[in-house]
Length: 272
Image: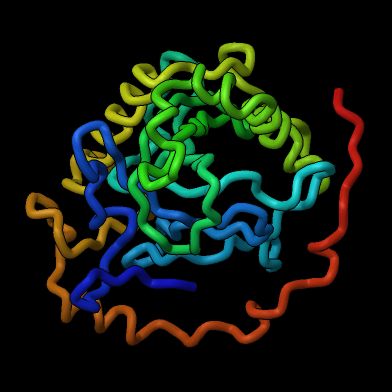
């Protein structure tokens, strides 16, 4: 588990306290899962200050399978802060409600990022995944510090410069739960990627839902909105109160550091 700190060493929420915008047309991204790794790490939306920790299902830590030919996650995976896919809002594009999380990002640059790293990304496009009946948008972006970032300005640049990557992205999201006995995921728009302008509009709408959440205009149904910087939020607390919350947390479990041997297994699954 990792609780985020700012440059002063004060605890902050990566969900609420990191600004959505790094610059004009540049967004912040919180890296939850470095590329090629398997542990399903995520911003814990229901825990105070929303630390990044490993998802648990049926009492076991979650890892994504290596679904041949993919090793773990095939991009740096994370979320855009100050966004929220509202489960009470039925998306007009997908006909499904939001998945109750910040919006997801697949960062396609060449550097393998570290868990908890905050990077600045250029948004290129978006994929509309339907996960067990919920809208789960996947933003495609590139780190602005990537040596090739200047060559990427829209989704067609990804198609041209990284042939096969977007097809692999759809294939990965379609099948990654199959080794766990789940059905394949579905997509809106016939699994076509939408362009940058469309993606930015979706991100802005999820930022509006987040604003309603953090100012208590929407019932978060268990989401922790504790933050240290959002001036208009009734959930704002001072840094000392935030530290007291973190100091009261139980120490991380030692077993969480040992990765089960079956995480290295490869799954071969016939594509439908």
